[in-house]
Image 1 (tube, rainbow, N blue to C red):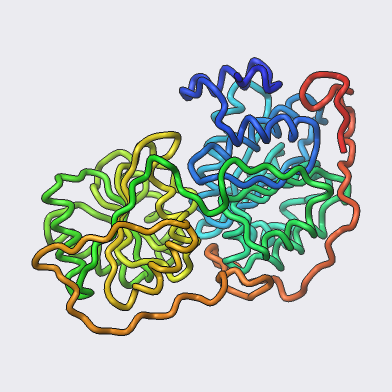
Image 2 (cartoon, one colour):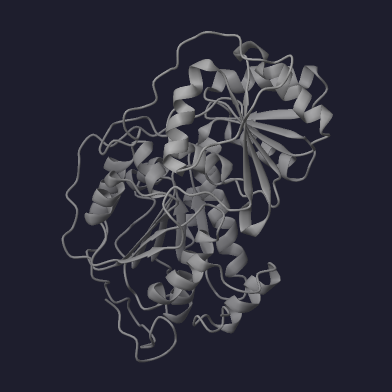
Length: 438
């Protein structure tokens, strides 16, 4: 199977080949043909398996094959839960569309809106956005959804986790009823299925691996550690093994800052990334980590999605997440695109319940090791993990990009057939004239 045989044009085949992709990943093989045919798609795959290319490539081909007026209305909208993921998706859109006449833009909070508004005024074919900033721009009449042909929810489960359901419904209420809808995520809970049923119309379900599974080439190791010795042990791991690129996850922003300071004091270059950091600081920290200017990036779960770091060898769970699905997304930063990776977890006595729930989710036991001198001596009872996914359907939470949930819940449209764009070329989405759109 090749990208050409999937129905992609030479311009997109050339673009992906320049990125070093020689053949489609399983999720791309299964999703791209259906999207090119104009079908609604509900797709689930392990993180790091090429989901972004799975939806951006066929959508970009559709946009390139349909004529547009001099003024470019937004015809494709990608919603993501975090700024980092929005930026990453937009980078991919630009790389894949370098040989076609497609204009794209990204908007998210944490930065001034003026430049974003100026870009939108010049015309955009495909927009990548976080919900909060997008609704702000809509309220300012800087963006219109009246010509949307394709709507994509990326990392839909994280959207739900972060309380974006009302914002999503509100954005949908401004769109044409006739459109194509795509929903991509690494995991699907019952709540996500419920969300999908209100957005997608007769979707094709695509799954390339068991839900909540992790990449096969990622090895898991658990160190049973005394809570007060976690920082000392983390420093020992990095120094003794001479690790040069390590992503570490903490549960809290304060914990991320404190660990970063202690690493720097131990002469290990490090930076923290979390919701209280300015967008400029977050962007700089991620850039420095990617180009190996710093060895360690300490992050909260806001960074578990959207961090695409090629060949990242190590992820450390300094603290286990209290929602087991987040473990999947954290360690999904390593072992990407078939590479090997190592996921290390430091578990104290009060986190044993979290470990059990993660093992239940993964359907496997994580190998545990006790290191001399760091034996767990604390006797704190296990903290109980969340009784349900933190993404309880409709639960109100503060989103990461600083926009509060919309006050009212909008009605979802009942008819989601695609609205035929003006002045289309008359060709099918794949370029093969006999295909019909839903």
